[in-house]
Structure formats: structure tokens, C-alpha cells
Length: 293
Image (cartoon, rainbow, N blue to C red; front, side, top):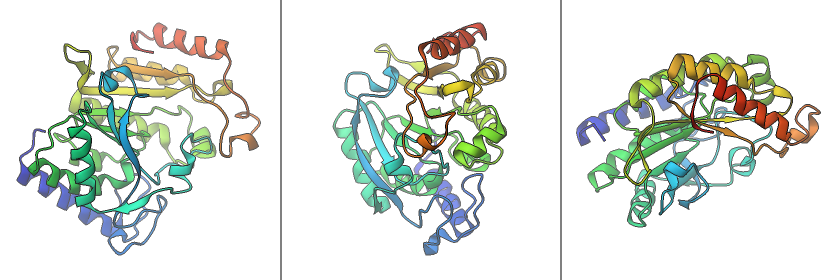
């Protein structure tokens, strides 16, 4: 972490102040979360912790030999109708956690030897995350920090994380705004996502790994291939290659399957085909990308 304890505490205070009329994410709900008013994410003053532990199903550079120390927050600032973690994001399976309790979780994961602390769906609780990190830093937290998000992030919030987050792992979900609205209720998603990824890349650059192949800094980008070309893969990979870096580490994911409300939509009511996935890989390669996949 590049910031001193005092600087980190100041960042946390600035982020927490924004909860009074919440504009932490692009939705700008304006509710007073300090008084437990609820906006789109349905999260009040305290973050909702769903689960935590060493995770071995993440990208290889995060997992290493001892796993990624994942902390799953309940709630989300996206409304994806096919979310594979819908019990956490939509059904809010989690419990309120104080900053001190969250610190204890981070330090426990570090003691277990996890290669990083991986905050999953943190966009709506970035203030609470910073609040806990200011304490954890003073108590000896030194593991790299991963911001594992949906790509629907406020530039103002991301700037508060500059010098704090080591590894950004955003989704690049959609290239088309209408599709983003239909399937994730996310206004202006492509524009917001592209600006957010540019800011993340400015802060940390391309992915760097140590001699073990474990990530220490940089950005990994996830892109989930959807049936019928709905994710706009061609435009997404061209954006990454042309406006970020051809050395970007990109996970072109094939695991889409219809869950939650996806069964109600004919265009989403099936897995992707092998042909669709291979075409997505070809698009990524043709754009000049060569890391990940």
C-alpha cells in the first residue's frame, strides 16, 4: 500500500462522508446510508458479509498455491438477471459486519497464507472497505488487495482507491447500452465501464506476476461470453486492445448458464455453444490480445 496510515484514514473519512447522500457508484441514489436508508444496493451503514475464505476457483495468477483470500459482500450495484451468485447479490444472503469485524476477516485470511485479499462485489461498499483497511493497515495487513467488481464504478470512488488497491479485476460485461439496461438495469454501462477500466489501468497498469506466477499488481479483465453475441465481444476486445493495452490479461469466460431470471428470456435461455466460445477467442486474438483467455 502506497499510502501512510494517516492518508488512508483521510481517504476512508472522505468516502464515508459520501454515504450521507450516497454517490459511491454511478447510480447516485442520494439516500442517507449513514442512517441506514437503502438505495439500489439495499445496503445501509454497514457492509453485508456473505462469506469468506481461501478460494481456488479464481484466475491462476490470483490462486497460486494457497488460494485467493476472497471476501464476498452481499448486495450489488448491478441487477444482472443471470447472476450466478444471485443468492448473494439479489437475495442478500449475508449479515451486517462492522469495520473491526471485517479487519479480523482480512487478517485471518492473511494468516492462512492467502496470496491476496480479494474483495468481491465491493463497488457499493467501497467506503466501508476503506474504513476497515485504515484499521487493518495499522494492524499489519500487507497482502495485495484485489478489487473484484462488475465494472460499473464511479471515477470519483476509484480515485479514492488510488494507491490502495494493488490489483483490479473488473468485468467488461456489455458493449451495448440497451442490452445492459435489459439484463442488468445499468444505465450507460458501456460508457461508464470503459471510463472505469481506463482509470484502473492508469493506476496499476498491466498485470505483473512474481517468480511464482502470482499476481502482485496490475489489472485482470473478465468478459463473460453470452449467447447470441449479446455481450458484444468484438467491440469489448477491441476496446481493451486499442484503448488500454494489448498486454492486458483478459479472461474470456465460457461458463455462462441460465440461472435466476435468465430462463424467462429466450435469448438467454441456453448455454453458449462451443462455436460461440471459439469465435470469441478468435476475436480476442485478432484484436492483438495474447494474455489470459
